[in-house]
Image 1 (cartoon, rainbow, N blue to C red):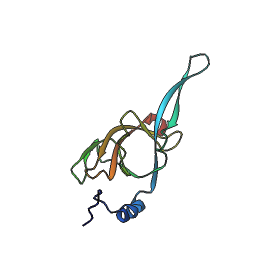
Image 2: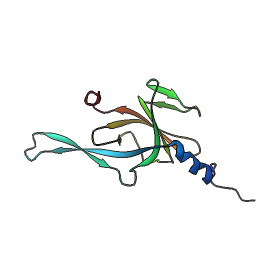
Image 3: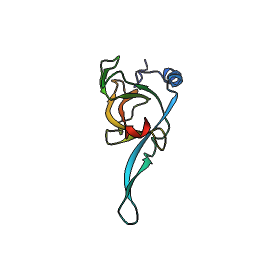
Image 4: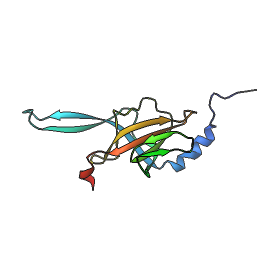
Length: 129
């Protein structure tokens, strides 16, 4: 009898893509001074290999939510990424565009290492209202 290493069948993973319509880019933000070192601007650097990840983003009902699998995640927004991404951490950011950036405040993985959940808050919220 063949026993799979994964709990989720590959065909099921393929069918889950229809629910993950957003494209999520994980990024680092660098502070870049001007030539006179007077003004500092922030430069978005996408994390190599973490561009356009399939995911689903939604507004959280509060600052903390219990997911269906009893995991607790914090943040104003929640992203569910299709896949296991252990290298993502709260020092990184989610870049939707050049001007819409979220800080990652929480990272949670499901027990089967199939999904990664990110808790986000909008960076520079006053710029986007």
